[in-house]
Image (tube, rainbow, N blue to C red):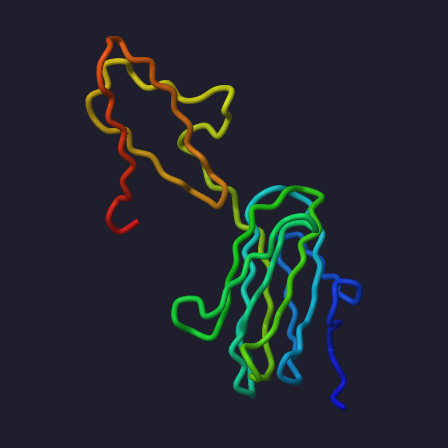
Amino acid sequence: TIPDDVGDSVEEARALNLNADGIAVFDGNIEVGGDVDYFTVAVVESGSLLIDLGTSGTGNLDTILYAKASATSQWEVNDNVRGSTASRVVLDVKAGDIVQVKATGFGTTTGKYALKLEMLPPVPDDFTNNLADPEPLESNLTGNQAGEIESVGDRDLFVYTPSEDGFLTVALERVVGS
C-alpha cells in the first residue's frame, strides 16, 4: 500500500495555520484514485477566505475542492475553475470559524497538488449591509442607483419612501463586463 500524506476524515484532518499575512500553504499528494485529504484552519478575523487547489508536478490529477466555513454550514464545491484542472472556492468567514477543506481528484486521477488558503483584503463597501439602517433613496427618484457587490456575502440595502401613490418599477441589472 501507498502511505497517505493527509488524513481521510475530519477526525484525521491536517490542521493548517494562517500566517501573519493570512496565508497557509500545503503541498500534498492524491496517492490513489478516490483519496480525499482533509484539512482544518482556525480563522482569527472575519472576511473572505480564498482557497485554491492546483496541480503541481507529475500525475494526471484533476482537482476537486470542497470547503465549508463551519461544521454546520454546507460544503461549497468547485471543479475546474476557468476551464483548468485547478479548483477555487471563496468563503465568507467569521472570527472563530473552523474551516474544513477536502482536496481530492476527479475519478481515478492522481498526482501532487498545491493548496493555498488566503484571507482577502477587505474591500470598501459602497452601501450598508445593515438592515436596521438601509441607504435612503430620494423620494423623487426617477433614474438609476448604481452600486457594486464587492465581495462574497455583500448586500447593498436601500429604503424608498414614495412621495405619491402609483406604480413603482424596480429593476436590478448587471453591468456588462462586471
